[in-house]
Length: 160
Image (cartoon, rainbow, N blue to C red; front, side):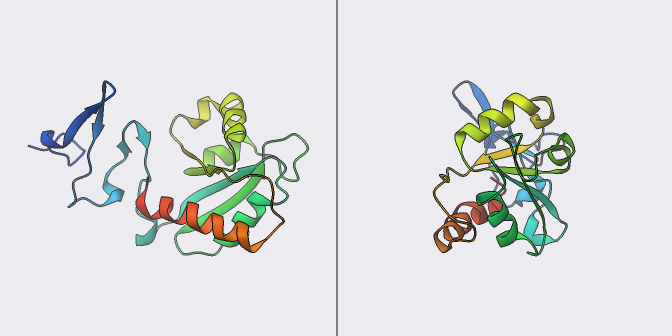
């Protein structure tokens, strides 16, 4: 008997650390699950059409997030934007950018903390993912591009 609106069977529920978690049924597509383990999920599979709005954030919006924007811009199924969290960033993040984004990638843990402090209310229904990419690269440096490809692409495919 499926749970209302979720397409999940009771046998697929499990508990971890006292919280119920949904276990993915192999027959279901990621687009059908809106939440798993209490985290917001993609509303649709980005590889099946329909654009997923992605926001890349770093501190200054000079190297890492603009590189990510350039690498992923123009890919099918993605709408990409970048901004910085510092007040003197080239393009400073706005509440409108946060509202528009479905998935937000931050480069470092400190960016995640800063984002959470400034936009806590707007982040309740957002997927925010820390990429753990340090500030030691140049714009469009091949090593940075490789790291971005390795850490971002699987997250967009799996909806995790």
